[in-house]
Length: 146
Image (cartoon, rainbow, N blue to C red):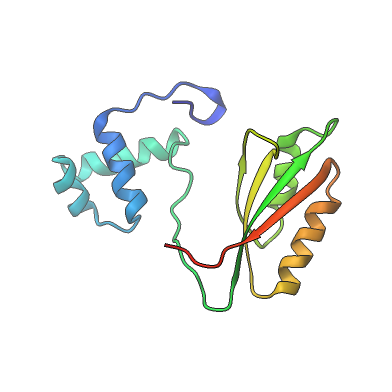
């Protein structure tokens, strides 16, 4: 597995199980994690610190959906000479953008964004379309999340 900077990161079974537990609930207490992993709490803390330092854990966040809020997936097609990572960095600065993925396929970037209104979402889409290097977008509004 590649970490930050393209360096090879070695993860053992305990690391993988820890990541799965945190993915399901990032607020799981260290005491519960230590029980599940059959490790001491200090060992769990050290593993989490190591995974953060290596860039495997990028951030702890929550998964939510506010009633009336618009959650959208925006696919972005990029054309040279502007490199895709530079386009992604520029889009990420917009306040409504929650997450960006660089992907393979017809589109180059997937943007996950939240907005309080259709006007706010439209403003984001127009911003993305104005970024140098962006040649097309395709937006899907999430109707329900499970």
